Image 1 (cartoon, rainbow, N blue to C red):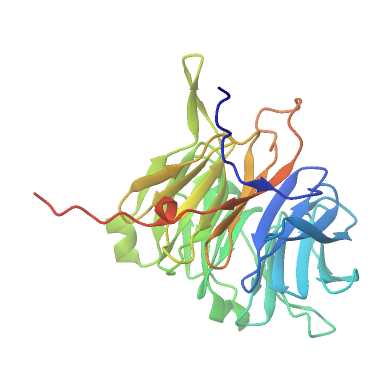
Image 2: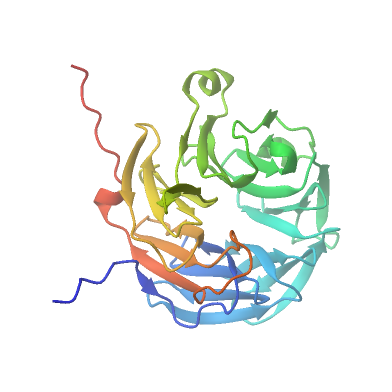
Length: 336
């Protein structure tokens, strides 16, 4: 009898043709964006897994973000940030950085886009004004990861710096971070995501670890912790993989991590428990995003060159139906 197929999700049709840097769901629909090294921003309908459109850029793309279901942003190696009208195929340059743009995030309550670059700056952009750049903030290193919550923006840079900004202050012209921390992980920051409830953030490193941090100083000292993940025994050796992506579930506040080992793990951070571990995807899990109500998880299976140039499977995006038991926190057992 043939073995039962491993459930990884259903692949989208016409995936990007080169490395996938980001997948992100809309906050108001089942539309899905994917930025890619193939120099295109791809738009999909996740419910049907069919492509809607693609939008060309001048260079490989490193990140993307929705403004709404009719507009989106993408940025990449050439330092350009482009705004695309998703109802047509038109796009325009919003602005530029001096070097590659690693991360972009739409601050919906403020009507502004924030971008983080290897040129060691954050920039805020207002697409409604002719001089779109409204603020530039100097950073202590290249931006490697960034995440915006309701009230705070967390930026991880080279040199293991972690900068926490009050979004209200930042959007009012402030340039001083609320907090400037050193990462509690010993190796380079690879991913960051603000908690669903806004209490803190999860930070992933290239060395298969995640740190659970809190904004409040008292909580930070009393409750922060770190754990190992995305490592596998191969030929008697413990092989460690980067944590490429961290995604929080909007309903339960549990979160998924995706690594260079091609595996997704779902965690209950409050109870320090792993809830679920997927079968292996064909290659690295480069990016993930939960849908707005948490019933789907988009997974970019795309080799991230952790082991240098080598043959690797074709890039793919899977839409995985999320089971409630995989993401619901387990009730704590009463103490004996």
